Image (cartoon, rainbow, N blue to C red; front, side):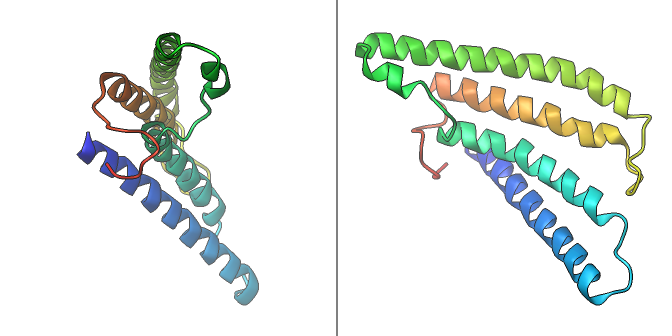
Length: 155
């Protein structure tokens, strides 16, 4: 799991860095050049989408998302653990639904090209599948205790 976590973290950081680079190119072009490359806006959006896809798994592993902590304070320790497990199971089920429906969405996008970059939209839509997989993977790992403690950046 440490290697997978690191891959998702590197993917999130790389996507974010690429998005920042593309936006910088766009800003530089608008200020100093006569024309702006037509592909920068679309590329920035795709890099942003992929940074979310990779970053979601990192966030799940670290426990950065909203939890039912307030309710858990008023429950016994055992009941709180049951609530936490039920929440994790619901999140995993939601991730499975995302994965299943995103696959057909990716198939639909395989025949469509993006306007500026002219890459298959299936690649762009694959980020939805990536998000679902990352949520499912790190939720199951958290339930089974494979990811270690939450709220830590150490894999």
